[in-house]
Amino acid sequence: MKLSTALSMTPSLGAFLVSFSLTLAGEQHAAATMSHCELLCIYFVLGVLQKGRTAVIETQPTVVAAAGGEAQLNCQLLQSKEVLQVTWQKVLRDGEKNLGTYNKYSGQTVNPEFADKMEFRYTGLQNCSIVVRNMTEQDEGCYRCLFNTYPEGALTATTCLQVYELHEPVLRVGESDSSAESLVSCSATGRPAPTVTLNVTQQHLHFSHHNTVSVNNNNGTVTVTTTAVLSGFHGNGTQVSCAARLLSGPQMETVLMIPEVKLTEDSYEKLESDKSESDPTWIIVLVVMMVACGAVVVIISAVIKRRSLNRSVSA
Image 1 (tube, rainbow, N blue to C red):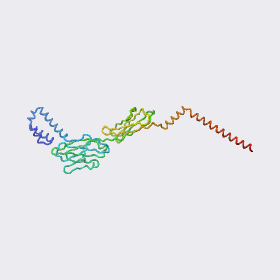
Image 2 (cartoon, rainbow, N blue to C red; image 1 turned 180 degrees about the vertical axis):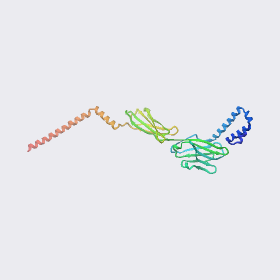
Image 3 (cartoon, rainbow, N blue to C red; image 1 turned 30 degrees about the horizontal axis):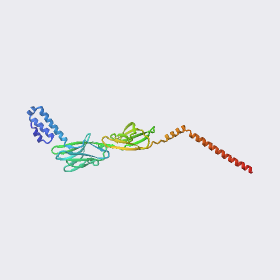
Image 4 (tube, rainbow, N blue to C red; image 1 turned 135 degrees about the vertical axis):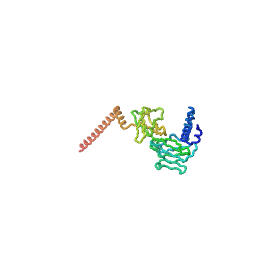
């Protein structure tokens, strides 16, 4: 069987298979006497050849980018090839859509439909990169680069793009039933759902009674709110922080100083009412004021009466 001749004469795997089939058909006797070991060797060679075709392109399996930003997708041939054209495509459910091409003779061409969305960053027949701008959820998915080579045909590689979104967390501090406790909550919105963590710097303080609620928004983002009770709080200078992070993205943090616990208007009135009920001082003050007022009235009346008598005597 002329296996080595078929490999040297046929430049592509498809041509090799055709040549190999014709060789087998022309030499039925050799195929009939072929041992099981020889068949395994041939299958091994075919597998190595196919793997080699997909391993000649270097690219990132996954690229992560922020919403509103840009992402760069790269494809580079690890072996020098005679490349005629490089094509970038977006993989869709019903096929592929061409984004742009870089041709050996005509240069780069961008599909007008994506002129505001993508551009070539590095153009070359061995190394070609594109940039996707103004990232949105619709830009997520897989992208394919095709190196059209001669005489081997198309060499392809795929890289997938993930878009994340994370907004600054909002930290709030409220009052609790106890003056030594504060109710702390933090909300963060992102896509995918962020992880929200509350922290306090002072060692004698700690969070308890954690509760986390997630809400799915219409735009595909998720708002996560974590609430906890800060115990051991006694005054000013307490610093709490909230960190929101994504598994595939960065972390954002907000820090807040908790002021001294101040009574609300209702709490103040209640406190004054309690003091009034338990402290008789106000009654004593009221009695003294009433007695003083009565004495003043009596004195004024006496003075007026005496003046009236004096006037009568003089007359």
